[in-house]
Length: 259
Image 1 (cartoon, rainbow, N blue to C red):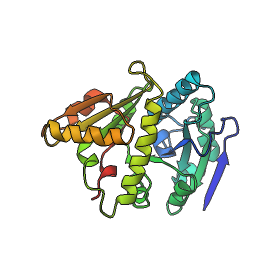
Image 2: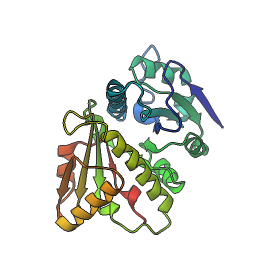
Image 3: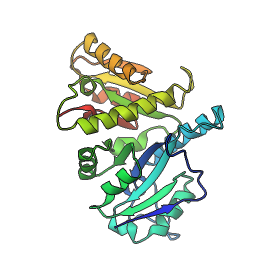
């Protein structure tokens, strides 16, 4: 069973041009942590949604007629939060988040909702939900606790170059194509801004190989229309320290892989 609530005070995006992002409410708000007014505290995805909102604001400032914007859907599969739908909508308004649709679905039906809404990126803290989305060809990213410490004034995306240059054959081809489609639109968004003071930062990291592997990954991204702001060749060094330095909101890695 799926129900959708259109948020009428948010300007709807061009359905053919919008970059639709779905986020689970349990990632945005802390379930069971509402105050006496029924308002939830913020969760780990809160800075990410603020960053998406910041990108939209800057795009519209540059061009009021811009149609390539993030269109955010809040999906609730948590049974406890579904019992208090008004708390979800009220908390969203209270915290100033621009969400166009609220979707309340069971854990069995939420994939149908992603497909019907043409979701290009699905963000969740549930590993099983991320796996289900990927299996249906929806680019799905698992968020972790580091997301909460990311800055909200700039959207930071990290690409794993090792996965980008892998073969396109295999059972996960649909997921890979979804990742490439999202990346192309993200690259187009990034291209709306100059080299400095951009609300979007794109970085590339290759863990294995040398400069040649990094160069291959950069060329692959450029073929999709994505120009990385930064590139790092780790040549076998651990990825943790550079992630701590870059503080990305999410990492695009296995979603490009064919296995």
